[in-house]
Length: 273
Image (tube, rainbow, N blue to C red):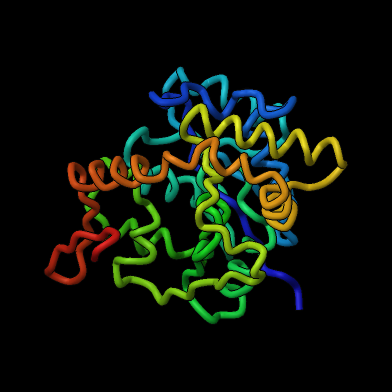
């Protein structure tokens, strides 16, 4: 049986206040966005030409668009704060049977868990598959059917929703959702932070990729978790950031609640819905 066509949507922009232009920062000799693209293309479902980096129309994101184009991946430019609109329009521009969504901050998103999520949706076992439970923050991904964003787009109430996009898929009641469990005890490291949001996160990624490149290895989750267990001081570099990260996320969602309509009712979706 021929494998169904998949794309990866990667929301990304350069106007971070905590780590400006982080997607273009050097991570052991390559830009962060190049590291992410090289990571995602390790998936058996995806080639580089299946990766769509979704950024804004702001001129401040022109350098990101130039870098992605130079690297041979696709760029889509759309709404600044309404991420649903941006991703939906990207999915219309690049139609596919299956969609993976990888946050632009998650440059070590694991391709094996990405494959497991896409395969789960391909087999029809769920409309949405999500990995991440017990994994390092930033290692997991989401996969869903190609028509899922259409359903979200028809039901969501437009607004600022660039934080918490995944809740539309997992907490809205619109989809059947299957969690992808941790497949290897080695990967059970929820205290390891692998998302690029602060200067300390950048230092962690530089240490990981410098070691991987030196050994000629792919920065798979097997490699990363083994390396961090052997060099545990890496954990301490950004260990104190998670609480503030989640507090900030909750504050943004409180100020800009994510809402959907089901029938005549309007619901707020989020971590406690």
